[in-house]
Length: 419
Image 1 (cartoon, helix red, strand yellow):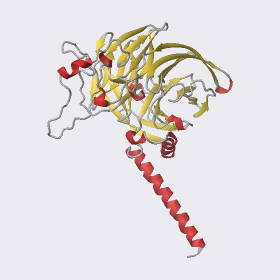
Image 2 (tube, rainbow, N blue to C red):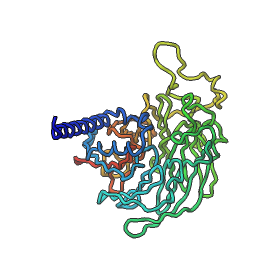
Image 3 (cartoon, rainbow, N blue to C red):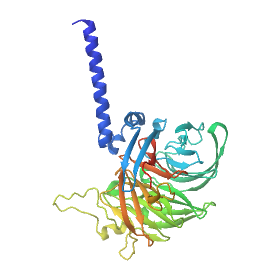
Image 4 (cartoon, rainbow, N blue to C red):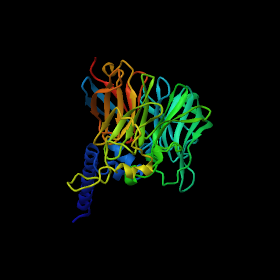
């Protein structure tokens, strides 16, 4: 066989292989199968995951909702560290969104020009094992992160920074102070089980923290019922670092936001099923691990006798007491949706969404539009499937909805049809 023929066959085979690989990856992205299902993807380097998401990102998709046809446009963050399970998205000013990645990289995304400016600062780079959330307002940046104490121990901290805008859309970031730090946890703490969110409410900061240990025994441990522990709680922290336990009995609250500017809502991961959305009230006990609508990860409905949930006598060592009056959630999901951050939508841009809760999810790869009545009871819910794991969600100043996806993109949602 001539060399020319061999070369042509090799080139054709390579092209067929590349096209076939691309189509395989594209289909896997659509179906959320290997390598895009979250469990297996944890073992891939971020650079590979970022490349896989980037080449399969659609330019836009059209979503059909009950009231609107919505256009979702994708804008990949120019960093391989954008994929993952942390970081935060905030409105910076009328034209820019501030995106802070899990590893501390900062970007401004201009919603007019639809492009990114990387902020040239190393102040946050790898300072934390994971940045779980950020809060920004009027030059004040609050970072809620997990920090390493030593090889065996970690802690949660709340740090305050100041931001001053300078020329060419760049900013000057300055560390101000440590607002609060938890006690260290040396029981193999897992960053993805630390929670959590930070909001500002009536001049105080509120944070949600998770059980902060591995998923052994479905995450059952005594910390959420222990008032001396910072974990499994909603905590109120003032600017002078005084910590108040606001509520207890939380498993892994991944969302925290305000409703009507007067109520605190959290969204929380259950075990196998039992994800919750809760109205957070002072000094209430939300039941974990004593009461849940979920089941043990080890439970399988096969007809064989298996334990759905431990009996109360087995839970007493975790702080459970049959005399406790546990507060029920507003709503639970079974199977799990892995509820993430939410918000109350307030603009008139999506007028028929006004005052509804828009809640993100990870496992369900959807937005949930939730309507509450005047008694704060869930009366209606719409699932909007976008096939993306949603880490954070905000309302832009012009009323559009923006989400930060685990696939490393900001996705902007705008309506196609008029009200």
